[in-house]
Length: 215
Image (tube, rainbow, N blue to C red; front, side, top):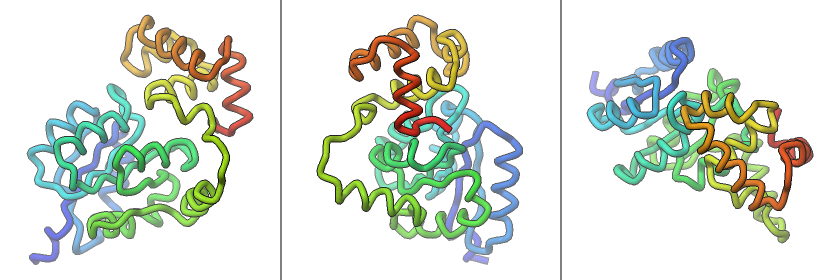
């Protein structure tokens, strides 16, 4: 019976169906137990502190805060914690940002049913987890000797604003989705336009499409 508590997992995802699906996958494993869950970034930070878990499954798209911001806060409190980021976005959109922010691995929700258990065991043992596809992307980047793309200088929130604008959302819609004021989102937009030396949302959209930042 002692084997059951060897890996304690906390799930932070705003979709109850996703959380239940993940719990069903993990329920079949003798060495993994789900010992806590949350549906918002704020709850994830508060409840995780009490959970005594050693692996955190953290969704990037939480309703109140960006998952990477939550990751940075939790890692500042518990530097040795293994955080496995979950996302509906392609790996090349958020994986590298997540790893740079301190995540131990990145998993798309589409690949979770097949890779979740192995990924959890790997990060729980102190290793990093990346898919074979992402490993190729990282290896290619190491071999390249050119300047980083312009969008890599953006903050996580600026990058998120860029992808939402490029997806066709208005400033008001983005403000509602991110639980921010319209003024704050407008400031992010102005800042990222200045950093990228662009003038309009249309130019942002063209850039995002050209660099495959949106699906």
